[in-house]
Image 1 (tube, rainbow, N blue to C red):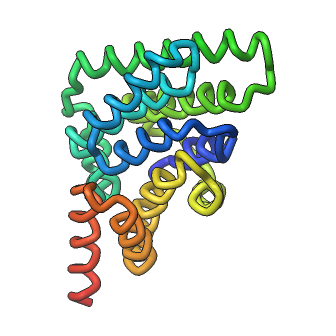
Image 2: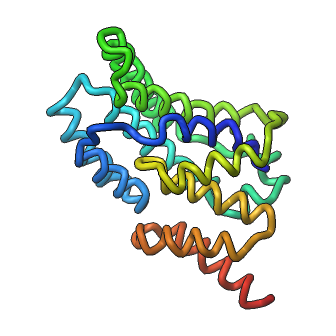
Length: 222
C-alpha cells in the first residue's frame, strides 16, 4: 500500500497551522499548480520580511521536494502502481544542487522552529513547521531505503481521508496520495473523483491533468 501509513500520520498531526499568513497560502497554491519559480518568489519575499519565522523555510523545502519528484516522474501514477518501478527507484539520479537546497531549507526551518519552541512550546506554526519537515525527510528516507517498512493500510487511508477533509496546507497533498492509493486498489471511480477536484482547484498543474486523462481513458474502456 505504498507504505503510506506513517507519512499519512505525519500529515495528520497537526491538520493545520493557526494564524496562517496569506503569503504561505499563495506559495502553496503555486506549489500545487507546479509553478515552482512563482512559489519560490512568494517565499523569498516573505522570508526577507520575516527571516526568523520557520514555516516559510519548511514550505521552501516542500517546493524543492515537489520539483524533484516531478522531474524524476515519481508522482506519476504508474510509478506507485508498478511495484517493479518502486523496486528499481535507485536507478533515478537526483539533482545534487536541489538536494543541497532542500536540506538547507529543512535545516533553516528546524533551527528556527527550535528557537521559537524554546520560548513558547505551544507555538502552532513552529510545531507545524517541525512536523512538516519531519514528514518531508521521512518521505526521502523511505524512498531511498525503507522498502520493507510495514504498516496498516486502513490506518493510512483513514489518516489521509482526515487530512483531505479537514487539512489546510497539506490537504491537496493528502488527496494526491489518496488518489494513488485508490489507483493501487483498482478503484478508478474514486481516483477520478479526487483528480477531477484537484484539477479544478489547480488547473495549471500538468501532472494532474495527465493523470486524470489516463483514469478517464481507463473508465471509458470498461
